[in-house]
Amino acid sequence: MSRLILSRRTLIRAGGAGAGSLLLSGCDKLFENPTFRHTLEGAEDLHMATQRVLGRHALAREFAEADMSPVFRANGSREVADPVYRRHLAQGFAQWALRVEGLVEKPLTLPLDTLKSMPQRTQITRHDCVEGWSAIGQWTGPRLGPLLDLAGLKPQARYVVFHCADLYHGRPYYESIDLVDAFHPQTILAWAMNGKPLEQAHGAPLRLRVERQLGYKHAKFVTRIEAVASLDGIYGGKGGYWEDNGAYAWYAGI
Amino acid sequence: MRPGMAPKGGDVVRRHRFSTRLWHWTNAVTLLVMLMSGLMIFNAHPRLYWGEYGANYDAPWLKISSAQAGAGGGEFGYLQIGKVRLTTTGVLGLWKDQDGRLQRRAFPYWVTIPSRYSLAGARIWHLAFAWVLAVGLLLYLLWSLGNRHLQRDIHITRAEWRPSHIWHDIRDHARLRFPSGAAALKYNVLQKLAYAGVLFGLLPLIILTGLAMSPGTDAWFPLAAELFGGRQSARSVHFLCAFALVAFFLVHMAMVVLAGPFNEVRSMITGRYRLPPDRPASEDGMMGQEA
Image 1 (spheres, rainbow over the protein chains, first blue to last red):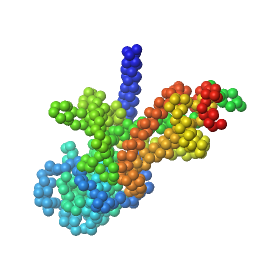
Image 2: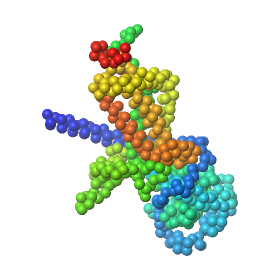
Image 3: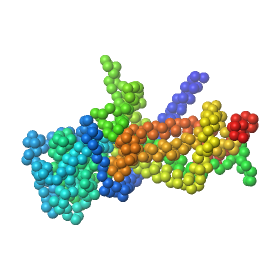
Image 4: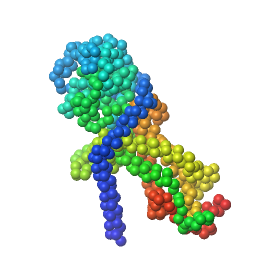
Protein backbone atom coordinates (compact mmCIF):
# COMPACT_ATOMS: atom_id res chain seq x y z
CA MET A 1 0.00 0.00 0.00
CA SER A 2 2.73 2.44 0.95
CA ARG A 3 4.49 1.55 -2.28
CA LEU A 4 1.32 2.37 -4.18
CA ILE A 5 0.98 5.76 -2.49
CA LEU A 6 4.63 6.48 -3.13
CA SER A 7 4.39 5.59 -6.78
CA ARG A 8 1.22 7.63 -7.13
CA ARG A 9 2.91 10.56 -5.43
CA THR A 10 5.92 10.16 -7.71
CA LEU A 11 3.58 10.06 -10.67
CA ILE A 12 1.79 13.25 -9.61
CA ARG A 13 5.09 14.94 -8.95
CA ALA A 14 6.49 13.86 -12.31
CA GLY A 15 3.27 14.95 -14.01
CA GLY A 16 3.37 18.32 -12.27
CA ALA A 17 7.01 18.86 -13.14
CA GLY A 18 6.33 17.78 -16.71
CA ALA A 19 3.39 20.16 -17.11
CA GLY A 20 5.40 22.91 -15.43
CA SER A 21 8.45 22.55 -17.63
CA LEU A 22 6.23 22.31 -20.71
CA LEU A 23 4.59 25.59 -19.71
CA LEU A 24 7.94 27.20 -18.97
CA SER A 25 9.69 26.12 -22.12
CA GLY A 26 6.48 27.06 -23.95
CA CYS A 27 6.68 30.62 -22.61
CA ASP A 28 10.39 30.85 -23.38
CA LYS A 29 9.75 29.52 -26.92
CA LEU A 30 6.85 31.88 -27.45
CA PHE A 31 9.06 34.79 -26.42
CA GLU A 32 11.57 33.82 -29.12
CA ASN A 33 8.84 34.24 -31.73
CA PRO A 34 9.48 37.75 -33.21
CA THR A 35 5.79 38.51 -33.84
CA PHE A 36 4.76 37.55 -30.31
CA ARG A 37 7.63 39.44 -28.73
CA HIS A 38 7.02 42.48 -30.90
CA THR A 39 3.37 42.49 -29.83
CA LEU A 40 4.32 42.40 -26.14
CA GLU A 41 6.94 45.12 -26.64
CA GLY A 42 4.29 47.22 -28.35
CA ALA A 43 2.82 47.87 -24.90
CA GLU A 44 5.66 50.39 -24.42
CA ASP A 45 4.03 52.73 -26.96
CA LEU A 46 0.73 52.33 -25.14
CA HIS A 47 2.42 53.18 -21.81
CA MET A 48 4.02 56.30 -23.22
CA ALA A 49 0.87 57.48 -25.00
CA THR A 50 -1.20 56.96 -21.83
CA GLN A 51 1.31 58.77 -19.64
CA ARG A 52 1.56 61.66 -22.09
CA VAL A 53 -2.23 62.02 -22.30
CA LEU A 54 -2.78 61.85 -18.55
CA GLY A 55 0.28 63.68 -17.29
CA ARG A 56 2.27 65.42 -20.02
CA HIS A 57 3.17 68.35 -17.76
CA ALA A 58 2.72 66.70 -14.37
CA LEU A 59 5.49 67.25 -11.84
CA ALA A 60 7.12 64.42 -9.95
CA ARG A 61 6.45 64.59 -6.24
CA GLU A 62 9.02 66.59 -4.28
CA PHE A 63 9.84 65.70 -0.70
CA ALA A 64 11.10 67.39 2.46
CA GLU A 65 14.66 67.00 3.76
CA ALA A 66 13.33 64.79 6.55
CA ASP A 67 12.11 62.27 3.95
CA MET A 68 15.56 61.67 2.43
CA SER A 69 17.25 58.26 2.41
CA PRO A 70 20.01 58.07 5.04
CA VAL A 71 22.28 56.49 2.42
CA PHE A 72 21.65 56.88 -1.32
CA ARG A 73 22.63 53.70 -3.13
CA ALA A 74 24.99 54.22 -6.09
CA ASN A 75 24.37 51.89 -9.02
CA GLY A 76 25.88 51.21 -12.43
CA SER A 77 29.41 52.57 -12.94
CA ARG A 78 30.79 53.82 -9.64
CA GLU A 79 34.19 54.66 -11.08
CA VAL A 80 35.37 55.87 -14.46
CA ALA A 81 38.64 54.51 -15.83
CA ASP A 82 39.04 56.94 -18.74
CA PRO A 83 42.37 58.82 -18.20
CA VAL A 84 40.96 62.15 -19.42
CA TYR A 85 38.11 61.83 -16.92
CA ARG A 86 40.53 60.88 -14.14
CA ARG A 87 42.65 63.96 -14.82
CA HIS A 88 39.55 66.19 -14.61
CA LEU A 89 38.48 64.42 -11.42
CA ALA A 90 41.90 65.07 -9.86
CA GLN A 91 41.59 68.78 -10.81
CA GLY A 92 38.10 69.04 -9.33
CA PHE A 93 36.72 69.47 -12.88
CA ALA A 94 38.20 73.00 -13.03
CA GLN A 95 39.26 72.56 -16.69
CA TRP A 96 36.27 70.41 -17.63
CA ALA A 97 33.48 71.59 -19.93
CA LEU A 98 30.19 70.22 -21.21
CA ARG A 99 29.64 70.29 -24.96
CA VAL A 100 26.19 70.90 -26.44
CA GLU A 101 26.08 70.09 -30.14
CA GLY A 102 24.29 68.24 -32.92
CA LEU A 103 21.18 69.85 -34.41
CA VAL A 104 21.69 73.22 -32.72
CA GLU A 105 22.20 76.70 -34.17
CA LYS A 106 25.05 77.52 -31.82
CA PRO A 107 27.13 74.66 -30.34
CA LEU A 108 28.18 75.41 -26.77
CA THR A 109 31.12 74.59 -24.56
CA LEU A 110 30.09 75.18 -20.96
CA PRO A 111 32.62 74.98 -18.12
CA LEU A 112 31.29 73.66 -14.81
CA ASP A 113 31.46 77.18 -13.29
CA THR A 114 29.26 78.54 -16.08
CA LEU A 115 26.70 75.78 -15.45
CA LYS A 116 26.75 76.65 -11.74
CA SER A 117 26.22 80.37 -12.47
CA MET A 118 23.05 79.77 -14.51
CA PRO A 119 19.65 79.84 -12.75
CA GLN A 120 19.54 76.73 -10.57
CA ARG A 121 16.83 74.33 -9.51
CA THR A 122 16.99 72.26 -6.33
CA GLN A 123 14.60 69.34 -5.90
CA ILE A 124 14.23 66.48 -3.45
CA THR A 125 12.89 63.56 -5.43
CA ARG A 126 12.54 59.80 -5.31
CA HIS A 127 14.85 57.81 -7.54
CA ASP A 128 13.21 54.55 -8.65
CA CYS A 129 15.48 51.84 -10.00
CA VAL A 130 14.13 49.39 -12.56
CA GLU A 131 15.19 46.64 -10.11
CA GLY A 132 12.54 47.81 -7.64
CA TRP A 133 14.36 49.84 -4.99
CA SER A 134 13.92 53.55 -4.30
CA ALA A 135 16.07 56.25 -2.70
CA ILE A 136 15.22 59.88 -1.96
CA GLY A 137 17.87 62.54 -2.53
CA GLN A 138 18.31 66.24 -3.20
CA TRP A 139 19.60 67.43 -6.58
CA THR A 140 20.78 70.86 -7.74
CA GLY A 141 21.64 72.10 -11.20
CA PRO A 142 20.53 74.18 -14.19
CA ARG A 143 17.40 73.15 -16.08
CA LEU A 144 18.06 71.44 -19.38
CA GLY A 145 15.36 73.37 -21.30
CA PRO A 146 16.88 76.89 -21.06
CA LEU A 147 20.29 75.41 -21.85
CA LEU A 148 18.92 73.91 -25.08
CA ASP A 149 17.25 77.25 -25.86
CA LEU A 150 20.65 78.92 -25.44
CA ALA A 151 22.10 76.59 -28.06
CA GLY A 152 18.97 76.96 -30.22
CA LEU A 153 17.49 73.63 -31.33
CA LYS A 154 17.05 73.24 -35.06
CA PRO A 155 13.49 72.34 -36.11
CA GLN A 156 14.52 68.79 -37.07
CA ALA A 157 15.74 68.00 -33.52
CA ARG A 158 13.49 65.45 -31.81
CA TYR A 159 15.69 63.77 -29.21
CA VAL A 160 18.45 64.77 -26.84
CA VAL A 161 21.28 62.24 -26.43
CA PHE A 162 23.53 62.21 -23.35
CA HIS A 163 27.02 60.85 -23.94
CA CYS A 164 28.83 59.68 -20.81
CA ALA A 165 32.46 59.31 -19.77
CA ASP A 166 32.06 55.77 -18.44
CA LEU A 167 32.24 52.38 -20.08
CA TYR A 168 29.85 49.87 -18.57
CA HIS A 169 30.97 46.30 -19.21
CA GLY A 170 33.27 47.69 -21.87
CA ARG A 171 30.68 49.71 -23.78
CA PRO A 172 30.04 53.47 -23.64
CA TYR A 173 27.04 54.44 -21.51
CA TYR A 174 24.56 56.82 -23.07
CA GLU A 175 20.90 57.72 -22.80
CA SER A 176 18.31 59.76 -24.65
CA ILE A 177 15.00 61.50 -23.99
CA ASP A 178 12.49 63.29 -26.20
CA LEU A 179 11.77 67.02 -26.14
CA VAL A 180 8.74 66.71 -23.82
CA ASP A 181 11.01 65.37 -21.09
CA ALA A 182 13.96 67.58 -22.10
CA PHE A 183 11.90 70.75 -21.53
CA HIS A 184 10.10 69.44 -18.41
CA PRO A 185 10.75 71.86 -15.51
CA GLN A 186 12.24 69.13 -13.30
CA THR A 187 14.70 67.90 -15.93
CA ILE A 188 18.03 69.27 -14.72
CA LEU A 189 21.75 68.62 -15.12
CA ALA A 190 22.66 68.04 -11.50
CA TRP A 191 26.19 68.93 -10.33
CA ALA A 192 25.24 68.75 -6.62
CA MET A 193 23.58 66.04 -4.59
CA ASN A 194 22.39 66.38 -0.98
CA GLY A 195 24.02 69.84 -0.83
CA LYS A 196 27.51 68.73 -1.92
CA PRO A 197 29.24 68.49 -5.31
CA LEU A 198 28.33 65.20 -6.96
CA GLU A 199 30.59 62.31 -5.95
CA GLN A 200 32.18 60.10 -8.56
CA ALA A 201 29.92 57.16 -7.61
CA HIS A 202 26.85 59.30 -8.35
CA GLY A 203 28.09 60.63 -11.69
CA ALA A 204 30.43 63.62 -11.15
CA PRO A 205 30.61 66.18 -12.51
CA LEU A 206 27.15 66.13 -14.12
CA ARG A 207 24.19 63.81 -13.99
CA LEU A 208 20.89 64.00 -15.83
CA ARG A 209 17.76 64.04 -13.65
CA VAL A 210 14.66 63.09 -15.61
CA GLU A 211 12.39 62.60 -12.64
CA ARG A 212 9.41 60.79 -14.15
CA GLN A 213 11.47 57.90 -15.47
CA LEU A 214 13.41 54.98 -13.97
CA GLY A 215 17.00 55.19 -12.79
CA TYR A 216 18.78 53.95 -15.90
CA LYS A 217 17.58 57.03 -17.83
CA HIS A 218 19.44 59.31 -15.37
CA ALA A 219 22.77 59.27 -17.23
CA LYS A 220 25.84 59.88 -15.04
CA PHE A 221 29.25 61.41 -16.01
CA VAL A 222 27.56 63.40 -18.82
CA THR A 223 30.21 65.00 -21.04
CA ARG A 224 28.37 65.76 -24.25
CA ILE A 225 24.77 66.54 -25.16
CA GLU A 226 23.71 65.99 -28.75
CA ALA A 227 20.42 67.02 -30.35
CA VAL A 228 19.36 64.53 -33.04
CA ALA A 229 16.46 63.89 -35.40
CA SER A 230 16.53 60.14 -34.93
CA LEU A 231 18.13 57.60 -32.62
CA ASP A 232 19.03 55.32 -35.54
CA GLY A 233 22.75 54.90 -36.00
CA ILE A 234 23.66 56.12 -32.52
CA TYR A 235 25.47 53.23 -30.82
CA GLY A 236 23.00 50.32 -31.00
CA GLY A 237 20.18 52.54 -32.27
CA LYS A 238 17.70 51.94 -29.46
CA GLY A 239 18.42 55.15 -27.59
CA GLY A 240 20.36 53.97 -24.56
CA TYR A 241 22.86 51.56 -23.08
CA TRP A 242 20.29 49.28 -21.43
CA GLU A 243 17.93 49.60 -24.38
CA ASP A 244 20.73 48.37 -26.69
CA ASN A 245 22.29 45.78 -24.41
CA GLY A 246 19.44 44.47 -22.30
CA ALA A 247 16.09 44.88 -24.11
CA TYR A 248 14.95 47.46 -21.55
CA ALA A 249 12.27 49.89 -22.67
CA TRP A 250 13.34 53.28 -24.04
CA TYR A 251 10.32 54.89 -22.37
CA ALA A 252 10.97 54.13 -18.72
CA GLY A 253 8.06 55.88 -17.01
CA ILE A 254 6.59 52.53 -15.97
CA MET B 1 -33.66 20.03 -18.74
CA ARG B 2 -37.31 19.60 -19.66
CA PRO B 3 -38.91 22.85 -20.82
CA GLY B 4 -41.26 24.63 -18.51
CA MET B 5 -40.18 22.82 -15.38
CA ALA B 6 -37.99 23.93 -12.51
CA PRO B 7 -34.53 22.31 -12.64
CA LYS B 8 -33.90 19.47 -10.23
CA GLY B 9 -31.00 17.25 -9.25
CA GLY B 10 -29.42 15.41 -12.17
CA ASP B 11 -30.56 17.91 -14.80
CA VAL B 12 -28.00 19.49 -17.13
CA VAL B 13 -28.52 23.26 -17.07
CA ARG B 14 -26.82 26.33 -18.52
CA ARG B 15 -24.78 27.82 -15.76
CA HIS B 16 -22.02 30.26 -16.75
CA ARG B 17 -22.57 33.01 -19.30
CA PHE B 18 -20.19 33.38 -22.23
CA SER B 19 -18.79 36.66 -20.79
CA THR B 20 -17.97 34.92 -17.50
CA ARG B 21 -16.32 31.97 -19.22
CA LEU B 22 -14.29 34.17 -21.56
CA TRP B 23 -13.08 36.39 -18.74
CA HIS B 24 -12.39 33.41 -16.46
CA TRP B 25 -9.95 31.75 -18.86
CA THR B 26 -8.37 34.99 -20.10
CA ASN B 27 -7.82 35.93 -16.50
CA ALA B 28 -6.47 32.50 -15.56
CA VAL B 29 -3.74 32.74 -18.21
CA THR B 30 -3.08 36.42 -17.48
CA LEU B 31 -2.74 35.94 -13.73
CA LEU B 32 -0.36 33.02 -14.23
CA VAL B 33 1.84 35.13 -16.53
CA MET B 34 1.63 38.09 -14.13
CA LEU B 35 2.60 35.94 -11.15
CA MET B 36 5.51 34.18 -12.82
CA SER B 37 6.92 37.29 -14.52
CA GLY B 38 6.36 39.18 -11.26
CA LEU B 39 8.44 36.66 -9.33
CA MET B 40 11.25 37.22 -11.85
CA ILE B 41 10.98 41.00 -11.36
CA PHE B 42 11.16 40.43 -7.60
CA ASN B 43 14.37 38.46 -8.17
CA ALA B 44 16.06 41.69 -9.34
CA HIS B 45 15.73 43.09 -5.82
CA PRO B 46 14.48 40.37 -3.45
CA ARG B 47 13.74 42.66 -0.52
CA LEU B 48 10.53 44.43 0.57
CA TYR B 49 10.24 47.61 2.63
CA TRP B 50 7.62 49.83 4.24
CA GLY B 51 7.60 53.54 3.44
CA GLU B 52 8.51 55.72 0.48
CA TYR B 53 12.12 54.62 -0.06
CA GLY B 54 14.03 51.38 0.47
CA ALA B 55 17.29 50.05 -0.95
CA ASN B 56 20.24 47.97 0.16
CA TYR B 57 21.21 50.22 3.09
CA ASP B 58 17.67 50.24 4.48
CA ALA B 59 16.04 47.53 6.59
CA PRO B 60 13.67 45.23 4.70
CA TRP B 61 10.71 43.49 6.39
CA LEU B 62 11.04 40.57 3.98
CA LYS B 63 14.14 39.28 2.29
CA ILE B 64 15.14 36.19 0.30
CA SER B 65 18.85 35.55 0.14
CA SER B 66 21.66 33.07 0.76
CA ALA B 67 24.45 32.95 3.32
CA GLN B 68 27.31 30.83 4.56
CA ALA B 69 26.67 28.77 7.66
CA GLY B 70 29.42 29.17 10.28
CA ALA B 71 32.35 26.77 10.66
CA GLY B 72 32.17 24.85 7.38
CA GLY B 73 28.38 24.42 7.53
CA GLY B 74 28.06 25.22 3.84
CA GLU B 75 25.85 27.67 2.02
CA PHE B 76 22.09 27.88 2.53
CA GLY B 77 19.15 29.80 1.07
CA TYR B 78 16.69 31.56 3.36
CA LEU B 79 13.50 33.57 3.60
CA GLN B 80 13.53 36.19 6.32
CA ILE B 81 10.39 37.90 7.59
CA GLY B 82 11.09 40.36 10.36
CA LYS B 83 13.48 38.56 12.66
CA VAL B 84 12.31 35.07 11.69
CA ARG B 85 14.56 33.21 9.28
CA LEU B 86 13.45 30.05 7.47
CA THR B 87 15.97 27.87 5.67
CA THR B 88 14.74 27.38 2.11
CA THR B 89 17.75 25.80 0.38
CA GLY B 90 16.76 24.20 -2.92
CA VAL B 91 13.64 26.34 -3.34
CA LEU B 92 14.33 29.99 -2.42
CA GLY B 93 17.60 31.89 -2.34
CA LEU B 94 19.82 28.98 -3.34
CA TRP B 95 18.80 26.38 -5.92
CA LYS B 96 20.01 24.44 -8.94
CA ASP B 97 18.94 25.64 -12.38
CA GLN B 98 17.93 23.51 -15.39
CA ASP B 99 21.63 22.96 -16.19
CA GLY B 100 22.41 21.83 -12.64
CA ARG B 101 24.23 25.07 -11.82
CA LEU B 102 23.84 26.63 -8.39
CA GLN B 103 21.92 29.93 -8.50
CA ARG B 104 21.53 32.51 -5.74
CA ARG B 105 18.39 34.26 -6.99
CA ALA B 106 15.22 34.37 -4.85
CA PHE B 107 12.61 32.41 -6.83
CA PRO B 108 13.70 29.32 -8.80
CA TYR B 109 13.50 28.94 -12.60
CA TRP B 110 10.44 26.69 -12.49
CA VAL B 111 8.17 29.46 -11.21
CA THR B 112 9.49 32.40 -13.23
CA ILE B 113 8.94 33.82 -16.72
CA PRO B 114 11.38 33.85 -18.41
CA SER B 115 12.93 30.77 -16.80
CA ARG B 116 16.45 32.23 -17.04
CA TYR B 117 17.21 35.47 -15.23
CA SER B 118 16.02 38.44 -17.25
CA LEU B 119 14.55 41.50 -15.60
CA ALA B 120 13.99 43.18 -18.99
CA GLY B 121 12.25 40.09 -20.40
CA ALA B 122 10.02 39.72 -17.33
CA ARG B 123 9.06 43.40 -17.52
CA ILE B 124 8.05 43.01 -21.18
CA TRP B 125 5.71 40.12 -20.24
CA HIS B 126 4.44 41.72 -17.03
CA LEU B 127 3.72 45.20 -18.39
CA ALA B 128 1.99 43.93 -21.54
CA PHE B 129 -0.24 41.45 -19.68
CA ALA B 130 -1.01 44.15 -17.11
CA TRP B 131 -3.15 45.80 -19.81
CA VAL B 132 -5.04 42.55 -20.40
CA LEU B 133 -5.64 42.22 -16.66
CA ALA B 134 -6.80 45.80 -16.10
CA VAL B 135 -8.85 46.26 -19.27
CA GLY B 136 -10.28 42.73 -18.92
CA LEU B 137 -11.38 43.37 -15.34
CA LEU B 138 -12.95 46.71 -16.24
CA LEU B 139 -14.89 45.29 -19.20
CA TYR B 140 -15.99 42.25 -17.23
CA LEU B 141 -17.26 44.33 -14.32
CA LEU B 142 -19.14 46.69 -16.64
CA TRP B 143 -20.59 43.78 -18.63
CA SER B 144 -21.60 41.92 -15.47
CA LEU B 145 -23.26 45.02 -14.13
CA GLY B 146 -25.16 45.33 -17.41
CA ASN B 147 -26.37 41.72 -17.51
CA ARG B 148 -27.04 41.80 -13.75
CA HIS B 149 -24.59 38.94 -13.02
CA LEU B 150 -23.14 40.97 -10.15
CA GLN B 151 -26.52 41.94 -8.70
CA ARG B 152 -28.01 38.45 -9.09
CA ASP B 153 -25.11 36.13 -8.31
CA ILE B 154 -22.42 38.03 -6.37
CA HIS B 155 -24.49 40.52 -4.35
CA ILE B 156 -24.62 39.40 -0.72
CA THR B 157 -28.11 39.82 0.71
CA ARG B 158 -28.88 41.11 4.17
CA ALA B 159 -29.93 37.62 5.23
CA GLU B 160 -26.64 36.18 4.01
CA TRP B 161 -24.65 38.71 6.07
CA ARG B 162 -26.21 37.32 9.28
CA PRO B 163 -23.45 35.75 11.41
CA SER B 164 -25.62 32.68 12.00
CA HIS B 165 -25.97 32.19 8.24
CA ILE B 166 -22.21 32.60 7.63
CA TRP B 167 -21.44 30.26 10.53
CA HIS B 168 -23.83 27.68 9.11
CA ASP B 169 -22.09 27.94 5.74
CA ILE B 170 -18.67 27.55 7.34
CA ARG B 171 -19.89 24.39 9.11
CA ASP B 172 -21.29 23.01 5.86
CA HIS B 173 -17.96 23.67 4.14
CA ALA B 174 -15.99 22.09 6.98
CA ARG B 175 -18.12 18.94 6.68
CA LEU B 176 -17.74 19.07 2.87
CA ARG B 177 -21.49 19.21 2.65
CA PHE B 178 -22.21 20.99 -0.63
CA PRO B 179 -25.58 22.26 -1.86
CA SER B 180 -27.68 19.70 -3.66
CA GLY B 181 -30.10 19.92 -6.58
CA ALA B 182 -31.08 23.36 -7.84
CA ALA B 183 -29.55 25.01 -4.75
CA ALA B 184 -26.12 24.41 -6.36
CA LEU B 185 -27.02 27.01 -9.01
CA LYS B 186 -26.68 29.77 -6.44
CA TYR B 187 -23.38 30.77 -4.89
CA ASN B 188 -23.30 30.32 -1.13
CA VAL B 189 -22.16 33.19 1.03
CA LEU B 190 -18.54 32.02 1.37
CA GLN B 191 -18.31 31.69 -2.40
CA LYS B 192 -19.78 35.14 -2.84
CA LEU B 193 -17.33 36.59 -0.32
CA ALA B 194 -14.41 34.92 -2.10
CA TYR B 195 -15.45 36.07 -5.58
CA ALA B 196 -16.41 39.58 -4.45
CA GLY B 197 -13.12 39.78 -2.53
CA VAL B 198 -11.16 38.99 -5.69
CA LEU B 199 -13.28 41.14 -8.05
CA PHE B 200 -13.58 44.23 -5.86
CA GLY B 201 -10.65 43.75 -3.44
CA LEU B 202 -7.56 41.91 -4.58
CA LEU B 203 -7.62 42.60 -8.32
CA PRO B 204 -8.26 46.38 -8.07
CA LEU B 205 -5.69 46.57 -5.26
CA ILE B 206 -2.99 44.74 -7.19
CA ILE B 207 -3.61 46.99 -10.22
CA LEU B 208 -3.50 50.15 -8.09
CA THR B 209 -0.29 49.15 -6.30
CA GLY B 210 1.19 48.21 -9.68
CA LEU B 211 0.42 51.70 -10.98
CA ALA B 212 1.91 53.16 -7.80
CA MET B 213 5.30 51.72 -8.71
CA SER B 214 5.42 53.68 -11.97
CA PRO B 215 7.30 56.99 -11.59
CA GLY B 216 5.32 58.40 -14.53
CA THR B 217 1.98 57.57 -12.92
CA ASP B 218 3.11 58.90 -9.54
CA ALA B 219 3.59 62.35 -11.11
CA TRP B 220 -0.06 62.79 -12.20
CA PHE B 221 -1.62 60.39 -9.68
CA PRO B 222 0.51 60.65 -6.50
CA LEU B 223 -2.36 59.24 -4.44
CA ALA B 224 -1.66 55.78 -5.91
CA ALA B 225 1.52 55.49 -3.83
CA GLU B 226 0.53 57.77 -0.96
CA LEU B 227 -2.59 55.72 -0.14
CA PHE B 228 -0.21 52.99 0.99
CA GLY B 229 2.34 55.24 2.66
CA GLY B 230 4.80 55.39 -0.21
CA ARG B 231 6.12 53.53 -3.23
CA GLN B 232 7.93 50.81 -1.31
CA SER B 233 4.84 50.14 0.82
CA ALA B 234 2.82 49.87 -2.39
CA ARG B 235 5.40 47.38 -3.71
CA SER B 236 5.01 45.32 -0.52
CA VAL B 237 1.20 45.38 -0.79
CA HIS B 238 1.49 44.37 -4.46
CA PHE B 239 3.53 41.31 -3.43
CA LEU B 240 1.11 40.41 -0.61
CA CYS B 241 -1.87 40.70 -2.98
CA ALA B 242 -0.14 38.33 -5.41
CA PHE B 243 0.19 35.70 -2.69
CA ALA B 244 -3.38 36.29 -1.52
CA LEU B 245 -4.42 35.50 -5.11
CA VAL B 246 -2.29 32.34 -4.99
CA ALA B 247 -4.13 31.38 -1.78
CA PHE B 248 -7.47 32.04 -3.50
CA PHE B 249 -6.34 29.86 -6.41
CA LEU B 250 -5.41 26.96 -4.10
CA VAL B 251 -8.76 27.05 -2.29
CA HIS B 252 -10.54 27.46 -5.64
CA MET B 253 -8.77 24.34 -6.98
CA ALA B 254 -9.56 22.36 -3.84
CA MET B 255 -13.25 23.26 -4.08
CA VAL B 256 -13.39 22.35 -7.79
CA VAL B 257 -11.86 18.96 -7.04
CA LEU B 258 -14.23 18.35 -4.09
CA ALA B 259 -17.32 19.50 -5.99
CA GLY B 260 -16.60 17.26 -8.99
CA PRO B 261 -13.84 18.48 -11.31
CA PHE B 262 -15.32 17.21 -14.60
CA ASN B 263 -18.69 18.86 -14.09
CA GLU B 264 -17.17 22.09 -12.74
CA VAL B 265 -14.55 22.49 -15.48
CA ARG B 266 -17.11 21.62 -18.17
CA SER B 267 -19.46 24.28 -16.84
CA MET B 268 -16.69 26.88 -17.13
CA ILE B 269 -15.82 25.77 -20.70
CA THR B 270 -19.19 24.98 -22.31
CA GLY B 271 -21.44 26.63 -19.75
CA ARG B 272 -23.34 23.34 -19.20
CA TYR B 273 -23.56 22.01 -15.65
CA ARG B 274 -25.17 18.88 -14.24
CA LEU B 275 -26.98 19.63 -10.99
CA PRO B 276 -25.93 17.42 -8.09
CA PRO B 277 -28.65 14.95 -7.01
CA ASP B 278 -31.34 16.21 -4.65
CA ARG B 279 -31.02 15.32 -1.01
CA PRO B 280 -34.09 14.38 1.04
CA ALA B 281 -35.36 17.56 2.69
CA SER B 282 -34.85 16.20 6.21
CA GLU B 283 -31.11 15.93 5.58
CA ASP B 284 -30.79 19.49 4.38
CA GLY B 285 -29.93 21.70 7.30
CA MET B 286 -30.41 24.87 5.24
CA MET B 287 -34.08 24.09 4.65
CA GLY B 288 -35.08 24.19 8.28
CA GLN B 289 -33.28 27.46 8.84
CA GLU B 290 -34.35 29.35 5.76
CA ALA B 291 -37.97 28.24 5.51
